[in-house]
Image 1 (cartoon, rainbow, N blue to C red):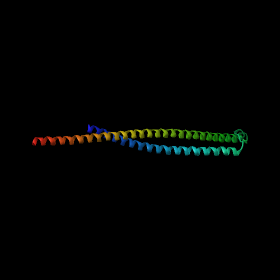
Image 2: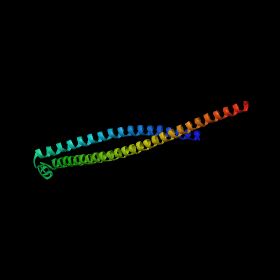
Image 3: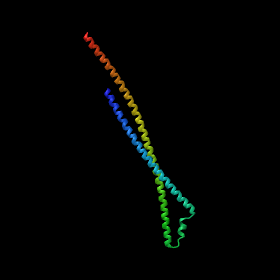
Image 4: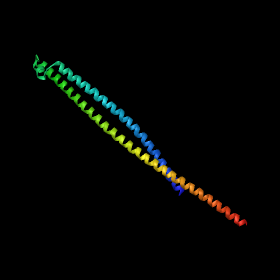
Length: 169
């Protein structure tokens, strides 16, 4: 029975060590995700700032429509150059918006993963606490059993000594 308790205590101790290793791994993963989130948020901030500056520049230039730029062309070649330039500007603006959208999605995805990892860490910590309580309970039971065995052993030794003494008489 004592050996059984010792085995259970050993298994619980190994489980606690494994859970501690898992908690360490979660902490590293959370730190990595936090760095990734910080980088994604910084990229989003930078893209937002660039987009605001683009809008500010457009406002400062005044009401200049694409049509007016095209109609100010002095020749057909100038018209094609201006059309090409407008298409490049519009494409750059579209790409900037797509990058902004992708950065916002990356921030949200990373936040969700970080929240998920933190939840996993908390769950693992709860499991560790339960295992530690179980280990304490099993250790206490093993100690109680050992004390009972020692007491019975002492009773047995006393009984044997009494029997030997009665045999001498």
